[in-house]
Amino acid sequence: MLSEDEKREIEEQLKHYDTKRPACIEALKIVQRYRGWVSDEAIQDIAAFLEMTPDELDNVATFYNLIFRRPVGKYVILLCDSVSCWLLGYDAVRERIRERLGIGLGETTADGTFTLLPNVCLGTCDHAPAMMINDELYRDLTVERVDEILEQVRQGTD
Image 1: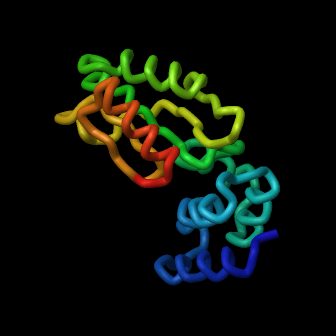
Image 2: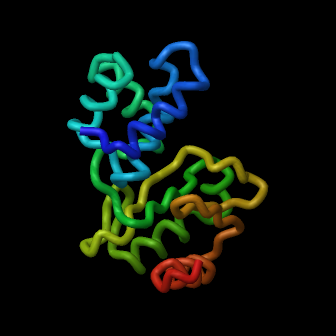
């Protein structure tokens, strides 16, 4: 069941559209912000609220790579794997994250703190390699910078 806060925020988004269906991505993002991810039950509730079928909404949710359909860590690391990042140090950055956190792509640390996901492009090719942790973009990554960033995030000072 959608919370009153979720419903209120979705209704605010509906004001921007003539029909309910175009607000589906925003509705998914709202629910994810409150819950951390979008469960099958949430898909059903959002679909009913927007007068869509659950299958229609699930198709949108699974296409849009920033909607998480399974639980993720408190901090989601989106590691850019574009050509620019590959050429300028992606492998070393990915390996350092694996060493430091003990997880590979698509995995979450045992304590639920970090999830590492690949991302096709973060739009900062002139400052590759890059990653995004939640809403914070990190560019011009080196192995040393990865260590510093992960430590800052762990300490909550970032």
